[in-house]
Length: 305
Length: 327
Image (cartoon, each protein chain N blue to C red):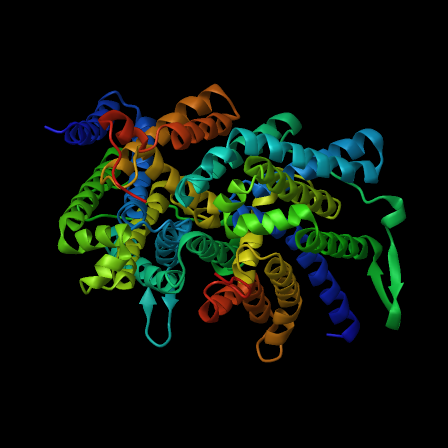
C-alpha cells in the first residue's frame, strides 16, 4: 500500500472517530451525570438525520438542515427525558435497558410510519463537494475534511464548556455527588434535562453529517450506537476525554483494519483466503481492541472510579 | 396452593392443549406459532438463569442463540452436501441427527459462555451490559463476513434434522420434541435454583461481601451460572434454526438479545416460569398486533414501556401480586 493511500485512510479513520465522538459524548455525559444507560441514543441520531433530510429537501439549504438536525434532536431529547427517562434515574440498569429498548421500537417504527421504508438522500452542498489539496500532494474529500473540523471544534467547545463555564461546573459536580448539588440549590431536574438534550443534539448533528455520506434510513442509529458503547467502554464511562481518545482509537482501528489487514494477509496467503480472513478479522478488530483494553484496565482508559 | 403454582400449571396445560386442538382442527400454522413460543421460552429461561437468579444483565445472549443456530446449520449443511466439517487434524463429518446437534450445541455454548463470561465478569454494572452486547455484535459481524456458510444471506437446510423414531417434518411431532425439552429445562432450572449452588448464587446477587465472608467465590458462582445460561439459550437457538430450517446472522443481532430480554421481563424476572409466560405473551402480541397494523412495533414498544414503568415484576408480578426480590 502506498503512503498516500495510507494517509488518506488515516484521515478517513479520523473522520469516523470524530463522528463516533459526537455520539459517545452524549452517552458518556448522560451516564456520568445521571447514571443512565440510554439505548435510544441511536434513535436520536436517526431523528437528526431525518430532520436534516426533510429540511434540506424542502429548503435546499444544507446549513438550515444542520440547524434543524441539532434543534429537532434536542427537542426530541427534551420530550423523551420529560416523559420517560426522568422516571428511570433511580431504577436499576435492567429497567433502563428495557425502557430505552422500548423507545427504540417506538421511535424507529414511528419514523418508518412518517417517512416510509425507503432511504432518503441528503446531498452534500456544492460548496463542500469536490476535493481539496493538502500538503505533500494529498488529495482529500472536502466534505470529510469539514466533518473532521466540525467534530474537533465541537470537542473543543465541549471541553471548554465542561471545564470553564458555570454549567460545566454543575455537570462535574453532578457527576461527583448529585444529592449535594441539589442541596446547594441547583435545579437538578433542569440540569438533567439540559444534559440529556445536549447529548441528543450532538447525536442528531452527527446523524445529519453522516447522512450526507451514507443514506438516511430507519435503523441507521443502532450500529453506530453499539460502536459508541465500545468507545465509552474503552475510554472509561463518564469521561469526555476518554470518549474523544476512545472514539479516535476505534475510528482508526476500524478504518485501517479494513484497508490494511487483507493486504497484510496477502503477503503469505493466497488472495481469496487473505481477503476473507482479512475481512472477518477487520470486522472484529474494534471488539478485540476493547477486550485488550479491558484486560488491562477493566474500567477503561480514563475511568477513574 | 400458591397462585404462582396454579399459574405455572395452567401455562403448561395450555401449551399442551392448544397445539393438540390445533392439530385436531388441522391448523398447522398455529402449531408452528406455538412451537416458536416454546423455543423463545427456552431461550428466555436460559437468560433468566443469569439475569434473574444471578443478577447478570446480559444484553448479548444472541451470541449463544446464534451459536446454536450455526452449530445446527453447519453440521446439517455438511451432511446435506456430503462434505466434512474439517479434515485435519481429525475428520469431523456433518450430521442430521438432532440429539448429536444438541449435545454439540450445549458443549460449545457452554465453552463460549465461559470465555465471554471470564472476560465480561471482570467488570460489572453498565460495563457488563455493554461488553456482552459487544461480544454478540462481534460474532454478528464475523458471520456476516464468513462467506463459507452463506455470509449475510444465511444458510438454508432443506430437510429438518431427524430424531430417532419420530417424523420431525410433522409439526405436532416437532412440537412434542420442543415441549419435552422445555419441561426438562424447566425442571433442571427449578432443581438448580433450590440446590446449594442456586442458593449461593442468589445470596451472591444480593450481597457479595457476605457470600465471600462464608467462603464462596462470587466470580466462580457467576461464571458457572453464565455458562449454564448460555448453554440453555444455545440449545434454543439450535431448535429455532431447525424450526425455520434456516440460519442467518440475524440470530446474532442485538435485536435478538433485546427480544430474549423482553420475554424475561414481560413474564417476570427471577421466576422459573416467567419467561414461558413472557414468550407466549410476546407471540400473542406479535400475532394479534401484527394483524392489526403494519407498524405493530409501536404498540409492542408502548406495552413494554408500560410494563417497565408501571408493572414491575411482569405478568407474574401482576397476577400473583408480589415481586420476587432482585436487584
